Image (tube, rainbow, N blue to C red; front, side, top):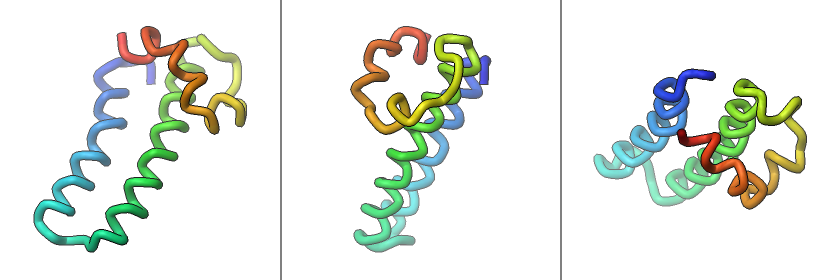
Length: 80
């Protein structure tokens, strides 16, 4: 996931699909909350995978994945 456009696609596509499903009443509010929580977990792993693929971190550790505030220091490397 070294390409930035691929990374943006992988983080935005599930969110857009989730919003569209909610907008057109394809899912209930309980499912929306559940799927949004799963999306938040998915983003943590996706961000860690990108950091590993561009060489910022050597391996994906639970500390990096579980704490979203640790990724704030890698913000510039993740999104630019």
